[in-house]
Length: 114
Image 1 (cartoon, rainbow, N blue to C red):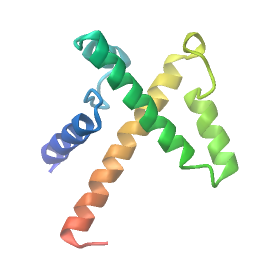
Image 2: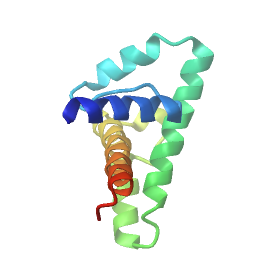
Image 3: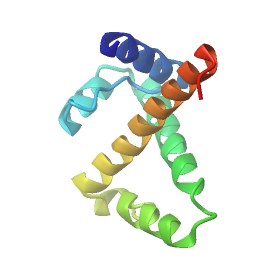
Image 4: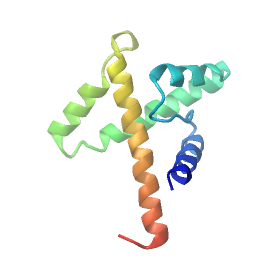
């Protein structure tokens, strides 16, 4: 079932307009994957990725403490030069986790299980 979920994950990422990545990949592998794109496509993929993690973080606005921690952990208000690898990896984990959650919810909906 894992291979099936990996394929679904890759398809969901492509449908969302971002470069597919596996959590076993390092940040440099994700950067390398982005480098294979032409500059315009790379910019679009990066913007879509940023939009996804911002949407995930903003979904926690109802819980102020969690929201502030999420903003801090992802470096939401920092400029590019101030971001650390931990901020980037946290962002990647948020987006990856959301895709996994979406796949699990889709599977439940399709099979009719709660």
